[in-house]
Image (tube, rainbow, N blue to C red; front, side, top):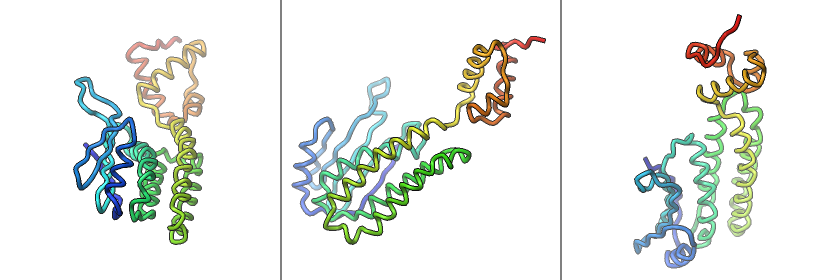
Length: 230
């Protein structure tokens, strides 16, 4: 199912936008006359049909971003698309009476979504995200003064992508393990510790509730992946 993000903006010259978009390589381009779209196919299914993609449609009164869900956590998928489309939008921003506050609100919303999607017990480790949100809020207050310096602000927004990439790597480290992954970790632990496992130590090491460790350990014993001795 496709998702959509709409940025309200009046186009000053669709012909100039069309010229820029058609000069970008590696993307699919569709010219409808009164609008022009640029899209990127990220992945096909086993039948060769488009499975994962994003499209930016440049219209006279708006810029529409459409993207597919990927089975990925929605907050992470939205941010992944936003960071990919901002550089493209920046190339034609000068031809739009672009409301920069809309861009900032979209980025701010995506950041907050990511922050809320991670486990509560690791949020303190990710406070850098909140600090970056503060930077964006500061930029938002300065929009009126920066309207004549759009190119400078666009560079600032793009530079934030690099900082968020670092934060995303940290988030990945704390993503919750599935039951299958926990069982694999238990088997590795038992093998590396001469057949022994300390549930409290294991739970603390992988940041997993003790109850989940016990449930998956019981499963492995029941299914005879692990044999209890003594």
